[in-house]
Image 1: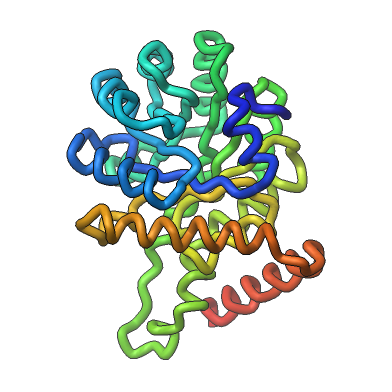
Image 2: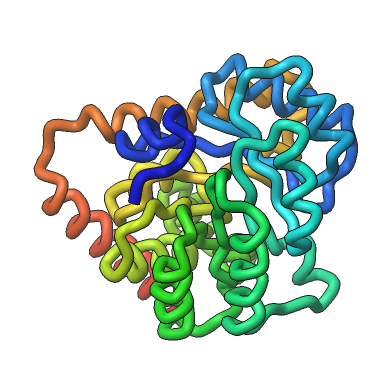
Length: 278
């Protein structure tokens, strides 16, 4: 499927999209501005902010980066398209899970359907909840594609926050931690990429080591959000974002056979997962 936004469509086709997320419930304008400035410096593809018309208007006033807005309210999403949002998303549910808010496949589908009825000239992205079993995630992805949704996003909070025993020899294993924290989102990406033909964004637990794996698994984009909370300045944030952008760009320039890379990265992830389960 071709995205309506030609600028974003080109990046998604090239599979080098890096989306920077500030959070569905984050209305701290000072933090959001810092993240947007860092994203500009690091050449991120676009930003994903809360669906608040005042915030969108402020951000639109000083940046040319495409703006995506996230919410579970179709009306909020629609209103933001009137003040400059280039894409809307039903998703970024992490902050809602802490409030014990979970969504069934039918609820997600109905939200998407309502949003689609209100917005027909802007690209729509839908996050597939990681709380669903994988077979339900796949069915929902297919149904959303048939509905005409433009982009899907995977998530994986269940593995993103894995904590190891302080005495574990895996605690300081950077490669293991990168693969493990992203494993849920990566698994969903791999499964969906084999059944749908629309772009997939891999989000939750992604860093510069796991971002290229996401692309090999079939993703066209990666989403980076909560990792930026560890950095205080625009300089620090931009350096971190640049690591992701560079790793994705390098992966796309790689001359190795893509099928071989996909198989090797899948086996690597499986081996690490087995180690974790022992």
